[in-house]
Image 1: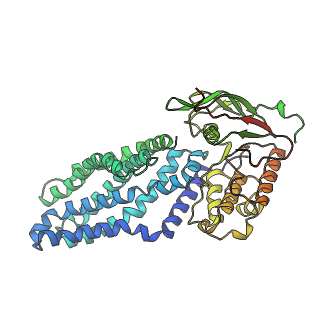
Image 2 (image 1 turned 90 degrees about the vertical axis):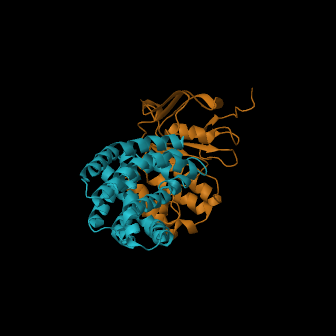
Image 3 (image 1 turned 60 degrees about the vertical axis):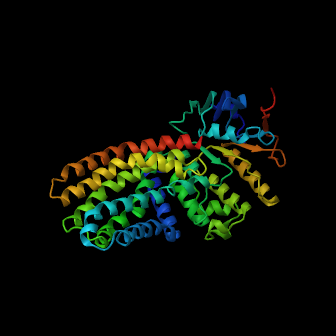
Amino acid sequence: MKPGTTTAACAALIRRDLTLIWRRRGDALNPILFALIVVALFPLALGPEPENLRRIAAGAVFVAILLAGLLALDTLFRSDYEDGSLEQLVLSPHPLSLLLGCKIAVHWLTTALPLIILAPMLGELLHLAEPLRWLLPAALLLATPLLSLIGAVCVALTVGMHRSGMLLALLVLPLYMPVLIFGAGACNAAQAGLPYLAPLLWLGAALVLALVIAPLACAAALRISLS
Amino acid sequence: MPTTPYDRPALLEAHGLAFARNEEPIFGPLDFALHAGEVVLIEGDNGAGKTTLLRVLSGLLAPSSGVVRLNGEPLTLARLSPQVALLSHQAGLKPELTALENLRFAAGLHGLRPGMSPISALAGVGMDGYVDVPTRQLSAGQKKRVALARVLLAPVGLWLLDEPYANLDLDGIKLVNRLLENHANRGGAALITSHGAYAYTSGTPRRIPLRSQQGDT
């Protein structure tokens, strides 16, 4: 009697999460609609002058996508916690951190990646400057996985509590700030004609670090939440 | 039933096992051993700590004192045992997925018992007519049967079943007893909780009484 392979377990988990997202695809559209609405409201509030909008475009898109991610964050473990699937995940013979890494990856693919693809279009609504059309998605490509990983650890810590939304936001926002500052900072530097590579490299370094540490921290936090 | 089950090391041993939440004792200290081929009943009133005991034995909760040994190896939070299948109050089934999809996922996660498939496990609990029905549309008793199929499917020796009889009709209760008997006959062991309304009827199972510790002082 021996358990299946870890690869099979990860594949089963990824397939299940993708199926679940497909069956609830209405909910999966929420973050995209949210970001779209936030960005579309800026010209209404600030007036339609392209110069004004261009100055804030990259930052506004960044903030909208960050908040949309925050909105989707709570769904990461919530339903699994409530129906007992999380218990089964913890009791499986495979490394929990690896399984959670797969879960976070699926979550990022389905909530953040569509927004990154849409980012140039969102930028266009705010007259995003020409050189930023590729830099903004690139910065988001480094920043959003980092946000998902940091967020996952905080969700894992709070999933056992009732109405943890406010606490989650309080925990997550200070940790999100450096990511926002580096990501949006790179875009602003490029817009001003300054070197922008350093903040991107910092984001990349932080992402590598988080890829290694966050799933482990997430696993430890979930074990605490379940006890 | 194997004739001399006590030759082998115990599947599960507890020594001085106790659990307290916020300094308030929930159960224990308990000493017992569970050998292959045994079904043991944990009896106690509501709030006596039956569920908590199963969670400690499965490794989800750390005991406040004492040790749990699975096949002679101490159980730690960092390294949970791949030897245990737990059936808890929440069935661990996704309402959006069909019974078969839920079991396929469980098989991927925990592995398959040799000679068993998700379909045959569903047939084994009398749910073969509901293979493609989303779990959301099943009744509480039917969900329990699918959850039992998940336990049946896992390639493990030790079953920890929390209230396996709850929500089941008379046929279902007989089914649980039959599953337990077969499991014991092939060398497995099971620990089940019950508040006494229904009980494992095959032979005379050993009982571990739990008494509520609150208000004792």
